[in-house]
Amino acid sequence: MKDTVKGVTWMGSFRAVNRGLTLIKTAILARLLTPAQFGVFGIATLALGLLEVITETGINIFLIQDAGELDEYVDTAWIVSIGRGILITLLMLAASPFIASFFRSPESLRILIFISFVPFLRGFLNPSEVKFQKELTFNKEFWFRSSILLVDTAVAVWLSFLTRSVFALVWGLIAGAFLELILSFTLIKPKPKLIFEKEKIKRVINRGKWVTAAGFFNYLFQNGDNAVVGRLLGEASLGIYSVAYKISSLPISEVSDVFVKVTFPVYVKILGDLKRLKTAFFKTYLVSSILITLLGLIIYIFSKEIVLIVLGPRWIEAIPVLKVLSLFGIIKGIAGPPLSLFLAVGKQEYVTATTLVGILALAIPIIPLTHKYGLIGTGMAVVVSSLATFPIIAYYIWKIFSGKK
Image 1 (spheres, one colour):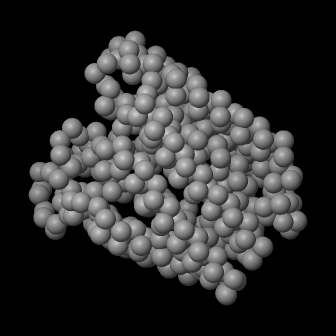
Image 2 (cartoon, rainbow, N blue to C red):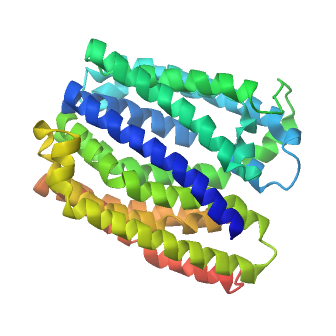
């Protein structure tokens, strides 16, 4: 529990800095760029996100779960990461015309091509970054991640002032990725080498199959609504929806994400003591759920004030959407922390099954509700889909602590 509290403190601090900068960035850019431009960027990140999840290897989770030394697999992890980055870039370049056509957005073609350079850079990152989590040195990760985020934000805002172009957002991503690449090799050891070991690669990919499936399903769960909005309602509506979604989930998902990231390696370390694991899980789950609910209610009550202060009057259409999405944020945030427990006990298939239930619950109502009620209908659909995951999450928690196979 002591490790959890310490980790939550550092990661909470990073997330506060992270979301504070993101909020400032969003507030500034909302006055420099139009909702349609945000929608174009949203289309590009949707496509990039899809390719990232369908090529996910689960290497970071593997390195944390594995009890051996990190040095043993760092070279293999780097080879896999480089190959994945190149593959995503090539797929992105090839698919860009079709993606732009699907969303009926010719304006998005150039940004889709430009953003394809980001995964190429990220592929060369030092896999030893995972040591921050594996060794619970979250204080070091705080400074590492904060510096990268600061550069990303500064570049995006500065170029937006100069150009009023959506390309500024991608330049921010590239600058952040380039800095992370430099820092990962100058500050973190061991440094990987280009050594190809076939058997180790097979083991990593085999262990990561459930993570890949879970990532794909989670992508559909998290982004299916954006795809529907972009396709049915257009770029401007996607821009309004994506920004409202971001604000609604800023404080809520960050509480959940902090607990997930911190508790995962902590749970791994105490797996041998089921009673201690159970106590640690329910204590942290109760605290996170209370915080998430309080923050969500604040967003719901003050939706109008938040939109007018943060985004400005031309984003007033986002107010009713933000109200609905704040409820979704509460439900999603409460459903998040158990996933770290599932990963810690090696039950990646539980995560996959949970997200699959959410996808099915989203797929049924989202198109008719969006057609009938617009963005409000989309928000209603994601609320329903999140609620649908609770029974299966509760069942898996019971199964783990009751010792059932």
